[in-house]
Image (cartoon, rainbow, N blue to C red; front, side, top):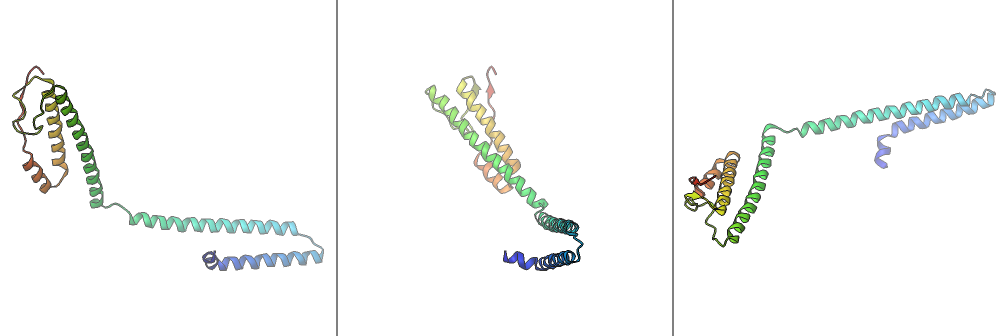
Length: 180
């Protein structure tokens, strides 16, 4: 309240003086016998409404100017936008990695149902030369998804991380399909 009074003390004083002048003029008119109270009140209400409208317009423009200035300061530059895009891509890769882990667990359950031991899913020689059993097909599908995931990572992440990932997990050769 104190800040508001300090900020608007001049218009408040002008309003007080205008109201005092109007009151004194009305008292003077009553003594003279010409009662123009209705006209004076109409003029006063009109000026008050115009004053409020003027204050509202000035407030709107000042706030709009401040908002435009803030928006200009927060503009996304090219590097910032690229970093945000990269974060989104990395988040997408993390979600795909979670789905890969779930799919690998499903494949393991398929092997477990048939009482077979699951080989290393990304090993070089872990796949048979001919894929004819259901579990081997599921493992092959996982490997395809895994290779697709590695390709997406290669396109997204930096070169040092790429070198680490692709030297730790070398690509594997594709076996022949039997029937499908």
